Length: 215
Image 1 (cartoon, one colour):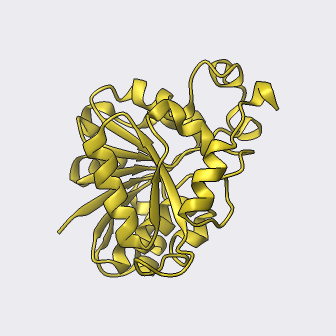
Image 2 (tube, rainbow, N blue to C red):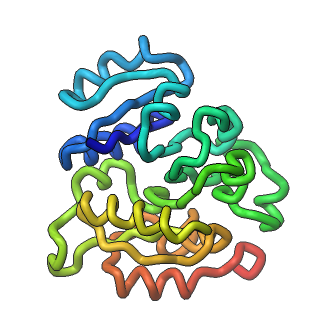
């Protein structure tokens, strides 16, 4: 049985957990305040879910999901994560995260910051471009008409394939956006962000993305 270790029990983390549990995964969910604060969340998620510390989620998860505010990405414990696959569901919101100069001038991307913090991990950007509640409701069977599509970006092809298989199992077609540096193409303000799109539409929206400096 595959276990997802979820770091961040907010809207995205809890809805990824809900979708994964519905498809037979086990879940260890965590937040910065400790497992004692997650009783209601785990009770609502039901069988297959348990609360743990951030370290528990990192150690016990076969695949990890990081869904914390970007300003807190350094709180993810690199030693516990090791070389696992890490799905980065974060977005940069300056009004919440404060100004991050290397993102403001587009020297790097938010997922590359997480990868630099977790040098041994295999970071794949996913789940950041969909409204949180829709993660658990918008999936459909393979081949369904206008099946919703999500993008992945990452530098490790095997990790991307693993995450793509997970997304497919949860009900979504997958479009490969390329290496992690291309994750900006479905960040906030880009055409592919939080719109319902099939795979062809997503490819077109990724191609239409523009750097902030060019907008």
